[in-house]
Image (tube, rainbow, N blue to C red; front, side, top):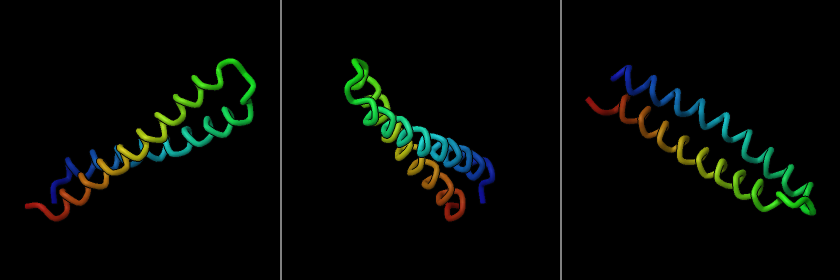
Length: 71
């Protein structure tokens, strides 16, 4: 097992967890303030953060699986 890749994978997963909570929270706040002039900006940023969370989660999971099963 490659411990370097495993640790990098865990760091990516932890970063993904942070974005998994931040993105939907911002999304909820943007929909609560739909009449605000910055609604579209906050909505687009929160959707981008949600996409980044998914990307980091998949990337971290791939690194962990590769470190376990590759020799």
